[in-house]
Length: 231
Image 1 (tube, helix red, strand yellow):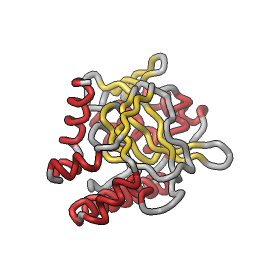
Image 2 (cartoon, helix red, strand yellow):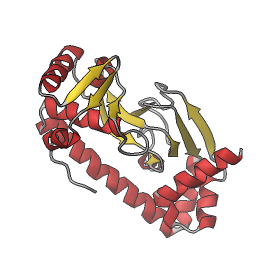
Image 3 (cartoon, one colour):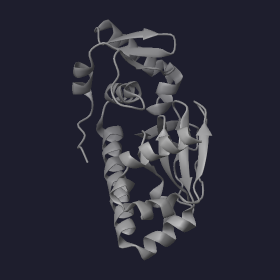
């Protein structure tokens, strides 16, 4: 239990919630539920009801599934990041699902409690508004990348995001992902991703293994990603 409390405290200290007075943050998470999700687990599916959460540990991907079953990843979330705040205000707004890339722990806040506190406290309302605006800008940027970026740029960007992992850049930089999962992430098919990985390998940028991709030259790869603003 002490380990869990320490992990939650660490995540809170890295989140936007750290700007709030301690008693306000405590009220927000007082009725929260701590949920452990194994790697590959999908605790929240597309079309879900309102919820709000904080990623305590691990790496999550946030994705959309099309009617024909294809998927595209629109965000990776790491320790200390807030989740699904926008769904607090729009009923049935869950247009995205989430999946654990690594084993994750999520602190799931009670929606009614979060909304009630935000209604009474402008500091919380402003923080939620800032979070929603930040996510909107990121999603618009992602839309631009998916619309105007090449498939190679999208594959490279997702490899780099996955390789960075839950706690930022690691050495060696390795993306532990299957070719099919990578294809799902970028909204493509496995055959296209296999061809692009072969090109990158032949150029000396990556080394492929069983269900993993080692990034040999992250600077050159990052230079290939679709230009994105930092928000």
